[in-house]
Length: 291
Image 1: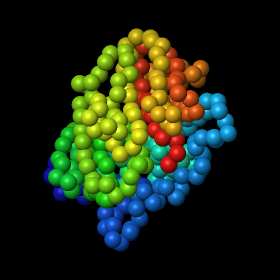
Image 2: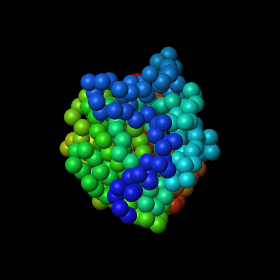
Image 3: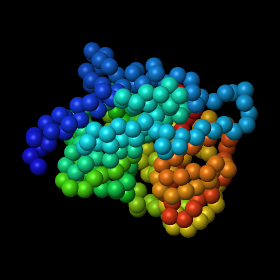
Image 4: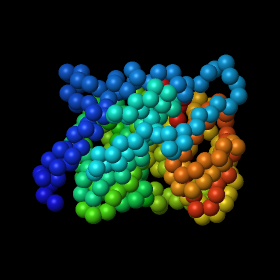
């Protein structure tokens, strides 16, 4: 498809979606910053009560998420995003956006800006083509993880690299632990890190650690289980919580039964017990609970 025609078509078909909290990179003009717009709306939900010493949890069933159907884009929002606003579903600690998107063949997001967000993209099916003003032009494949530190401001586009088949992906935004860093991009084939029937780390705050890294005291792990298994996840920091997202299958976490696309957050503890059913895939996002 002609690139110019694609960009025009994507913009026209997705115009309603761009009510989402995007920003201008013209920092001197201070125009509608992603960080400022989102931070002012977080409220106080899912921030730990320091008077409670026992474990705290929050459950988000798959069918309670916000949803949007733009034809070319079908999106499910765990937290408030774009036209979906729920004051009780604003964030989990620094985890501000968890979008479960399906993009039609040949369609996508035309060039748009972000700043001061750590943005993680995990394709679940299909391939996503990415271009940005840092000179990156890549295809993010299923089995990869991509991160962008938006920092002082970036411009990028994303579209389905296949003209016929849908691409399905998770897009995750975290508030950073420092503002106005130099923008950066990284991409890694996490399938090369995979350990069968175990959770394995794909993201951390440490540049030299396994997986990609971001400007936040966060660790992501993913596990694909072909058999039933009970395991334990130990937190890396006592200030963190874990938000579990069931990509496929079923699991029970600390006694809570979970199904496909359910989300479950836990904090005020240092470890959790996870019983996974066979043919399940789970993403664990360990994040600071205080922004």
